[in-house]
Length: 286
Image (cartoon, rainbow, N blue to C red; front, side, top):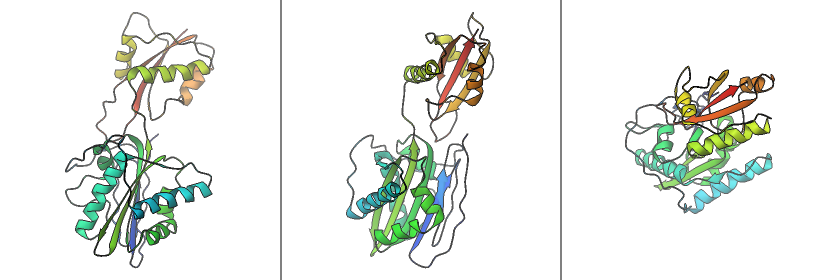
């Protein structure tokens, strides 16, 4: 289930930082400190579009490289996996860092600027969760130390659910404006690949899986009912950001002994949202 968390700003003297973590869309301006996270959901108004960099290499400045190294050292000290540098998230963070330098201020969204989720999606990132730390100070060392000593920012840096990061630092008049965008990325897969992944998970659970049919995909896109001449005894429709876990209700059905074959259908996500998810239907037969 996708959830939202809000972190209220905490005042600090100069220098200043802010962080954000939300499950829909959230925005928390802060002076001098604030934090944000986003995890799947609603779409706010968008402004100028960003252009995706795809998988191109990201060239980091010394300040940006320090923040990346420091973040992964902090995670390693907690037994957490390192974050990989993501080109699309880096583009989104660079766009926002430029906005902060231009406004000579820190915020998670300025007037006529896309919100955090849309900045990431517009840059080409695919995610089920997105978070952001923002800061302003003379050095990246100061910014990182402030983040690590602020519970909301530290939570973003050490979040076990995120696996990717984008970092940007822009200098103006001796001040550094820094942005770290974190995300739990969702792999882009074809419908065939999605169905194959779910089928493998079902087989591991002991359920034989028949070949996917066009009718299974149509059934996936339906809110209720099914199409085709063969009537399933049970249909589980669900949306998820990973294909290696099955819903609890489906696991219960599989363990009941009533079903002896499954068919998997995947369909496009029709929701109007910046977040990425897989839409799956599992049809069970006696």
